Image 1 (spheres, rainbow, N blue to C red):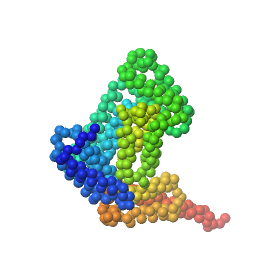
Image 2 (image 1 turned 45 degrees about the horizontal axis):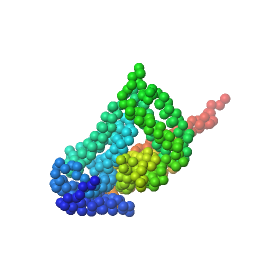
Image 3 (image 1 turned 90 degrees about the horizontal axis):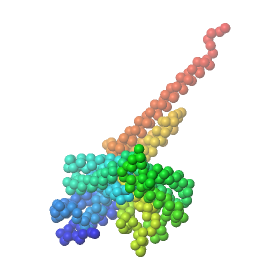
Image 4 (image 1 turned 90 degrees about the vertical axis):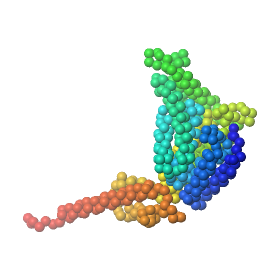
Length: 457
């Protein structure tokens, strides 16, 4: 339940709503690049409001959650995506959206109980990387203390959830770890099949056979260890096995209706659409993604997530129709895709991204030419020389300048790509010269062989 807004916080709420509206307008404007000066101005404005809010509230009132807090969360999310769009991925504000996305995933993992060591390792690694970014900014004073404290608190909360998941896994006995990991994988494969179109009898059979094989290892409903010992954590593995069999039966029984009741069909269709769009972005994000676009996807998923009651989707009568696991799979898949897109953001401004993409393409082509070798002529290398010359001519005093005279983020990354392309081109030219020299010597040898001898018989 959202708490009411105190009278003294109303001016802050009004200011924060205004900032959110300006950020939303900035996000929607596709006719122009997002300007660092505008983002910085809005960032300073929101920090000012956060400072005021901290002064009003008691330091111990950390559980306060009213409309000011939810609006601030929207503002920080938008600001974070703007920083990613500008290529400022190694700064505090850029960390916020990644932590928010990670928290959604690990919370769902905690709820479902479906995870293993290999699932948690990337999150632990990423949390360490994000923490180092926040600590560097805190030590350098680059960002206000209010911002670094907010992120440190979020990092600690995510760390606590991951540690809790880790502790749950440590309770599983060593003998049952391989069984548990395999059952987690099998359940994911079953749910993924349930979410796909068409019939899956061929794909379903090996999964069913493997489940029966695992089940046959139980004696009187229990998994046994070496020497007939009954390991601890039987309930976890047995429950997971039964869950897999339950999903298997539901897929078989309701394959025609896709395991989703008609009352849940609108949610299923919307999640399927979101997943398709996000999967397409994963393939094309270098060319088509503006990180602020992910805000709308996050918002849509949060709205769908909030429709659940006690973790389940319900119909108009309050019943829980079949097909819950399919919807949860789609929801978690979408969360995972958003996290993947946020984690793969390059430290290059959207203004420089077209140049970076062009250089990446040229570099791939040059690598292919170099790998396959000659013979080739200067004419073959001309298109690459022309492309690099065009990119070189865009620089002023050795830097790429934005349309409004600013220096966009990502200069180092783009220059590294450019230098690599020039080096590859020079290597190809050298190999071409060597081929010419070899041809010259071969031609000379042929002339010596064909010249009439001066010695007469």
